[in-house]
Amino acid sequence: MNIVLYQPEIPPNTGNIARTCACTGASLHLIRPLGFSTDEKAVRRAGLDYWDKVDVNYYDSFRELEEKYSDHNFYFATKFASKFYTEIEYKSDDFLVFGQETAGLPEEITERYKENCIRIPMLKEVRALNLANSVSIILYEALRQNGFDNLV
Image (tube, rainbow, N blue to C red; front, side, top):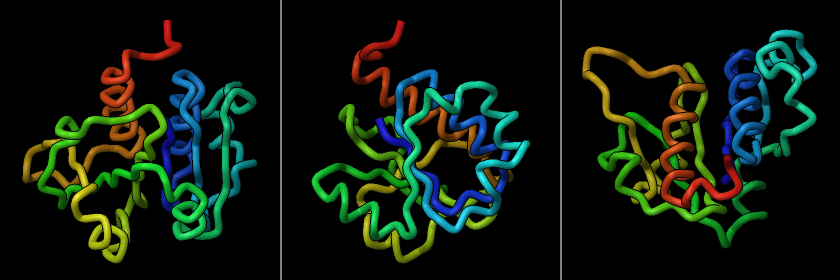
């Protein structure tokens, strides 16, 4: 599986997501600009000593990632989607894309991929789940559907 963070802003979220990637074998793809340096203490601390176990890739734009993996499926987490994340049949090499903590994904991306937008159900009165929690929820559903390949 592949986790994509579009211009992440909060170091501990990225660190926690990196740790989740290390524990599951998912690759982490970071779209610049980042709201921090990946050398920052907060990111390193949140990822603990797992950073050397994570396949981290950097891109200057979403378009760059999209072109490199044009033959893969991309799914976009947004609270504005009509489909639940459980309605997708994930493949082991799919890309799960998550937006900025404060702004989500750009409308140009969600409009272009409207059919591949997914959401986690929650109460209307709350804005959103924490980014690291959202990644975990959707990633583990995709892994479950693929038989938790290579996980013990």
